[in-house]
Image (cartoon, rainbow, N blue to C red):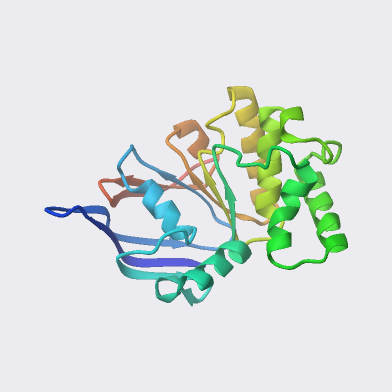
Length: 226
């Protein structure tokens, strides 16, 4: 599914070059549940952006579902993002004046799904994350955990190959954070491939594999025992 070979991301700061990624090799298979960890400046956000086709490497090869991402132009990258990857962010990024249902419909509007079909798909996806009774509520009428569930539903609505979550519990209290992580666990058990970016060890322990970065390189790639 994901095959990255000798990935470099270099920023030219005039007098100096900064290596955000320094020869990274990563393979992630279908239905894996992986956490990417590292301190600030380790390269984990850069790696996440490249996995999510939000950025491209300076050098190296990235193959996602048999497509060479590093050779694609912007329009092709946008198409892959919409079809292959569902994003969940720390800040829920919901439209404040739109209902949960309409927020979840948005990716389907972008890919041209008919109105009736997208409403039905969005409804089913909200039910999947336990929000069937909140679909007509706006974000300010929902708790933090419910808003993140809407964000997860929006990420899932196109049935992406990968669910990519960046600090998904960062804005939640510990109890609500545990509920969201249980949702990710359930989604993985249902067959979804999940990649978490986190600095919290207890969050990473939900995954089955932890990739640890430091100074732009992988220093550990370990299985998690459950």
